[in-house]
Length: 55
Image (cartoon, rainbow, N blue to C red):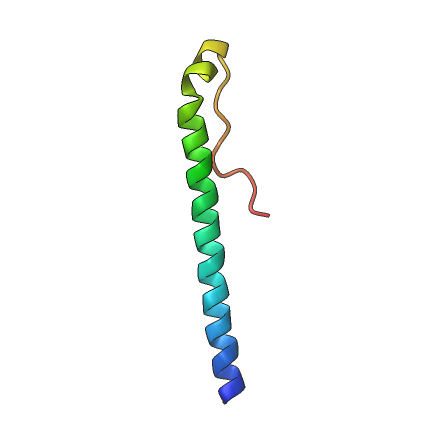
């Protein structure tokens, strides 16, 4: 029973770490898009979607 508890806790912790890292990555992409918004508009380039791949 103790092993099952540690596997469950580990799975939950790893899930939170993955979610936090994905959140940070998306925030960085949004900040980059906002920072380069003027140059993108002048070149008539449509911004790439924030969520592109889930690898």
